[in-house]
Image (tube, rainbow, N blue to C red):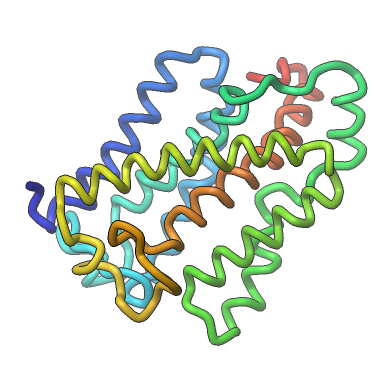
Length: 234
């Protein structure tokens, strides 16, 4: 069993290792994985919003509990961003051809990664736990993206399901290697509803929304990159 103080460092490292394995295996996806990871790594700086309101993990140098920030969140945010960007290409072929490019450039799915933050700002003033404000912002961003690009609905659904499965495997391993960790570290008053297997429902909900919205964002981003002379899937 993994001591509580090492669970978050080990699992953040495992997410980073999964990024590395996929990066090594798929040379055609390395560009999008690097760019997506570079964009999402900054999400790790939002950790103080969630500690201890949503969870309170011990970790390296006990940084999260002492300062709200930690190194593990940066590694996690970088890894899931890169993997989330690659999954749409793994679960379904990219739309190709002049018509796909026209739709992507003339009617992009929302305002790329900035869109959830537009919804996040007013939600932070609502009487919500930060995790629920985060989920609502992602859901609103996804809804606007699909309203503008309904042709991406199946791709987003597939990417969301694939990322949820990827994320669930890590959660299941966490529960196996550190029994009771969810109950010890997550704020018992934060999650809504039941906890199947001890896992707050907010965790798989985050996985699905993050994966689905990421698919819409990267369908636009790949064509913007193509306009600069790169192949759209690089």
